[in-house]
Image 1: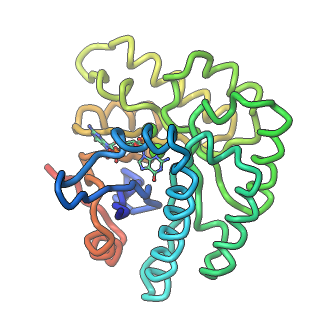
Image 2 (image 1 turned 30 degrees about the horizontal axis):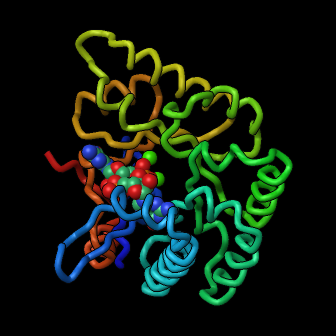
Image 3 (image 1 turned 135 degrees about the vertical axis):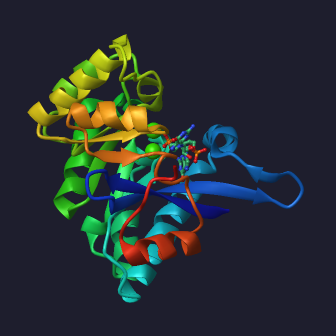
Length: 248
Ligand code: C2E
Ligand code: CA
Ligand code: CA
């Protein structure tokens, strides 16, 4: 297992303002296996909790290494699956990992999907509350793909910090004519601003998509246009300049 890192870029200045850690499985026989293939399996077999703990620890250690090397300090987000997010000892494990790695909590962010919010509301509220009290920011990932995204936004108002617009909406953006996707993306961005949440567009691949997003005031961009997920050592090279130029 290995973590790759994909920069989140403030498009106007090309500044790297964060990174998402994404797991890779380099299989001795089958080569690189995509997490889309093995994460669902790990969820079924219960291995996901161990994987999640490893990801948390590895991302914290890596971030601390970069900070000790005097690279620009940025938060790194990890993806937590719903089963792991709802584990009783999640908070104590995270607290312990932060302590052991001496990483300040503000440099760790957590990405969850709506599935994590489906559980009993009281329980979810208290987990979110505890994480936020620690100073850890929470992103709602793949926004817009769940079956009642808007009702969740309302219920969890003030409890989530960042909203990530799903790639499926970004893919269909057009600058020449206003597609349905344009209206939806524009609405999500305005809504996030209204709810005082940061908004990130993920899966941005073209200049055209970037232009539309900037027109709608979405400035934090993640996607192949700036960089694919890369190894820790390549990411360190990128972070040295603190900038990420477009790939075109
Ligand atoms: P995700 O959290 O939505 O992560 C974004 C996915 O989109 C990543 O796929 C990333 O490589 C890909 N991506 C980023 N920019 C672009 C782009 O411009 N174009 C296209 N076509 N794709 C882009 P990846 O790394 O294969 O991960 C797939 C999913 O697997 C993730 O979706 C996440 O749900 C899950 N995953 C990855 N790492 C972990 C992990 O450590 N723990 C857990 N629980 N799930 C993980
Ligand atoms: Ca994610
Ligand atoms: Ca996503």
